[in-house]
Each structure stands twice: as structure tokens, then as C-alpha cells.
Image 1: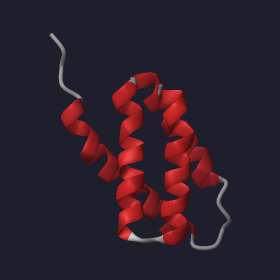
Image 2: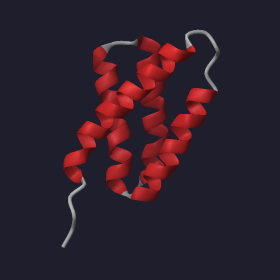
Image 3: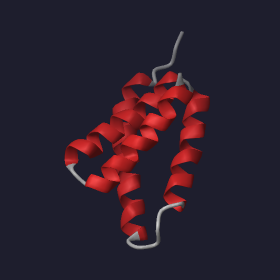
Image 4: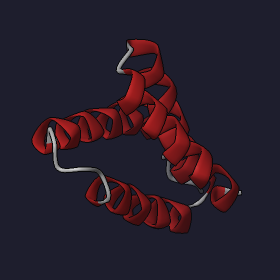
Length: 88
């Protein structure tokens, strides 16, 4: 399931960084949060995919681009944290 959601999360991140509207930032954060909520190996793959995506971006505005990626990732983490409960 995580491998199915991973390309959608990267696509949502790309659209959010392209359009730079708050609704797209929230949608990308929810898409990024959905991957680790399915399973933790998917979260590791998502981390590497987002890193590769960020490194593949053109050089113009690099620091701002990374700041937006980090902000979207932080928002996604905030969305996903309630789902990370210990299981008995």
C-alpha cells in the first residue's frame, strides 16, 4: 500500500511546490502523512524519495525550496502523529 501511495505523495509535493497555494500544501502534507501511516518501511522509502526529489530540483531558489519541503514534511508529521499509537 505504501508503494502505491508513494508516487502520489511525490506528485502532491511537486504540485504544491509548483503552485504554492495553501490548499496544495495541506494536500501534500496529508499525502505525505498517508505513507508512513500504512507501514514504516514505506516511510523510509518516502524519506529517500523526497530527498532525491529535492536534490533533483534546479538550483534557483534552492534554500527556499528546501524550506518549503521541510515545512510540508513537518505539517505531514503533525497530521500523522496521532496515528502512531503503541499497539498492545
